[in-house]
Length: 275
Image (tube, rainbow, N blue to C red; front, side, top):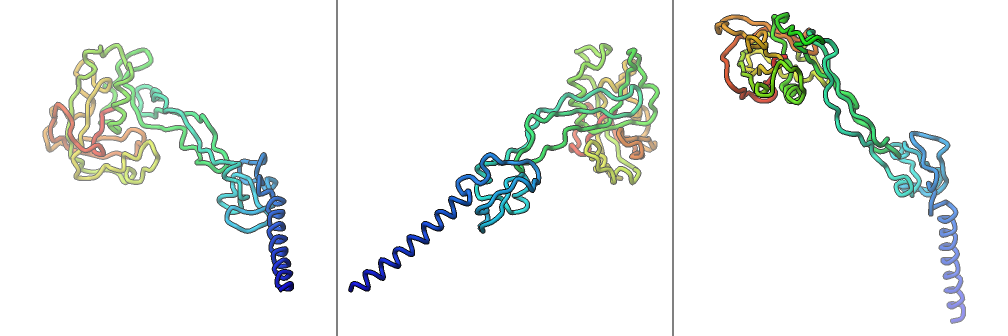
């Protein structure tokens, strides 16, 4: 009976010693704060600790921004070094064209408000470009007559153009003036389908044989004729007309005019504007 008690006491003492040893090991490993005060950005070999890892196992662990990808973060990394994503502001308004009276590019930007930390989501693109064409010189002279082919861009540009006070030549009561022309594309260069730059991906949707809608709006509309260059005015349905995508001069082709309408009704990917 006594031996049994003594055996139980010995076993209990061993279990207690084991528990104490594990507790001391846990405490000594920095389990209470292996990453406390040592969060580092990027992959940093000096940002190291000794203790339990997040995925299990004991030994060398890290508190840097790359440990999640490497799978060797210390156990308390997510609490001591929470991942913070990049935060950016709103897009600026689109700039004017780089050049007047020539197909060119416009730019808009946004800025970082908070840099990513501890492996947080990286920052998205901070700059966007898009094709454009201005029809006024810096002196306010109309140069629309210089453009023979139809220069087109995505209809999304029209939304921004309406927000800009482009010219005093178009008083506010005429800002809504415009019309739509439907064309059937006859041919186009292979450069359109190959275009993958963010500001020019709309060119990929141009296809032979498709019906597209092209809106004519100020300031592309001539102030005297109230027409857009290249709109096929007075052209019969059999006449081949030429067009070019603003933003990539190699993306060009031909089309035939179907009809003129008051408003466009094509799907968004087949809706463009004269620029």
